Image (cartoon, rainbow, N blue to C red; front, side):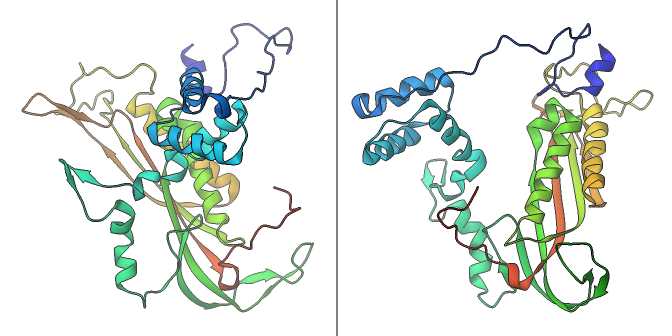
Length: 311
């Protein structure tokens, strides 16, 4: 059991205590059905929200009720499930443009306006991709890399002049690393590499960095003065020491497979009982992934989609 816990992904895999006799399963696809928004309005969405755990808040319920009412049709359960994921705060970061209220005091600017203020204060800045797309980029310079003579097929390499800009992107992948550190960090680093590679109409990966913030390590023979062995950790999450080892291995493994070397990083561990009795610790870890790359200056903007294109 201990070995199985180390080598399998608890989020997507199952341990078989005995060899499987068949791959046949009793599961059947769930039916597709419509939700009667046209007839029951918001009440229909409230019911399916509770039933399917879609996590729609009041704003969501009002918005989607109006959306499908204006479209003149009922949504399906599949559509609502997809909306709950792809249009969620996790995917779209709505909070950045929401009203910012601190201790009852509404602030004049939202988070997005605050973080974009330096860019707007210097209109002569060297940003060429900022606050859009999968990464950001700053103006680069002319270079002479070795590139294929005949892109798209077998070809010799030759030095060719190009105008390349510098690209940077970063993100975190915290909770998956807490549940299953190795694959959680793999997909965290891999998703960020996708962003590094999918800016504009295509960009080029360079090098990566990774950072980890975890709780007390409680290393054998090396317990630190502030570490309390009586601290209890959630049994559905990996312990901090395992997160640090397995997540680091996972991020490096994914970079190795895709040809992006991990060239920098950081680690922080902390867990302590404060004088007021409060416990401060990274029970939910932080897994930070960032990457630098290059993008051809001609490829900064994505083309508009056209009817008939395959997605």
